[in-house]
Image (cartoon, rainbow, N blue to C red; front, side, top):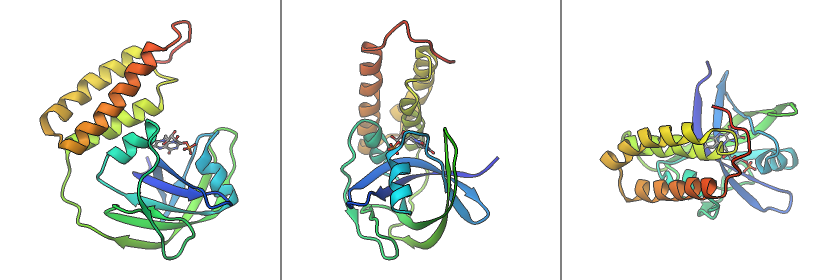
Length: 195
Ligand SMILES: Cc1cc2nc3c(=O)[nH]c(=O)nc-3n(C[C@H](O)[C@H](O)[C@H](O)COP(=O)(O)O)c2cc1C
């Protein structure tokens, strides 16, 4: 089983328009694999401009925000690649795509790290942050999971938020909970769901 790190991947298209998306980077022999499910703006951008940054942040609002339509997070220029990184990243890696394994569903883009920089100290694990990340993944799969599974998992995750969250985690959780509520309010009951 490969190690996966949940990061904020930033790419850009040929016109320089920047795109921010939470992506799990897969570790492989010192490289990181970006594996976007089609269709994907991240994939389109990387095919056109083969550079990315992976920002490591404990502000889970960025993960929740990207999944709920809030993509405007402050960025700063990188040193070695022509795409920016998150301004408030604890650390970030600058990545160059060196190989592409195409796939109709989920291509794998192998990236070499050309720069890894630390900006702020990591201050320890927080259970509410982990819960928000898990909830954000559920939200990214709303179209393929059953209501029962989503509600069951959110009930479990909510307890960590109620016990350990700070203001940023509460805000992120609220955005995700609102998105789930809106999804079920407009859901088509005839649509088949997987458990
Ligand atoms: C923690 C986390 C990890 C994710 N990892 C991936 C991934 O590896 N591949 C992917 O296609 N989407 C992943 N997603 C979902 C994407 O962020 C989301 O679908 C996004 O819109 C990607 O599509 P885009 O490239 O068009 O923005 C992840 C979401 C979260 C919250």
